[in-house]
Amino acid sequence: MEDTYELELRSVPFEHADSVMLRSAQRAELTARYGTEDSEPGVKPNADSVVVFLIAYADGIPAGCGGLRQVDDETFEIKRMYVTPAQRGTGIAIAVLKGLEEWARAQSATTLALETGDAQPDAMRFYEREGYTRVENFGYYAGEPLSVCYSKAL
Image (cartoon, rainbow, N blue to C red; front, side, top):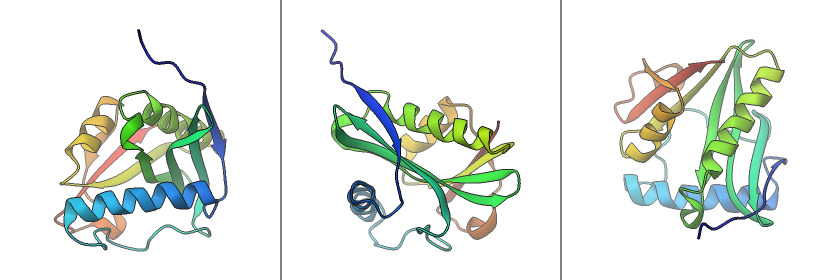
């Protein structure tokens, strides 16, 4: 029998307690993968730069998140996509990603872009499966050997 749960996506402030908790868990996981607490090139997203931040709640429990930072009039960058280990493979990442795509479309965006790292093959497979295409490293990530960038036309 398949597990079922009630999934709710909520837009919350970047500094919301559940956002801080999920982003801290993500940071710990990335620190373990890359062997450093500072594996992200460029300016870190913050409450001023993240224009929307979604949290997926599974049966009321924060299970995943993701946000968008505006790059230009037509492009947003996906930031802080994360799903708790216990909820991976349940469709939460897809729900968050689709929610971000819908939000960006409502803002008349034509492109979503993102950066992940070469030590995250699971993330690379996920984005490719969801229609994102690998592109030349852009912005802060240009010339960064560990960065892998993607984009998708909306």
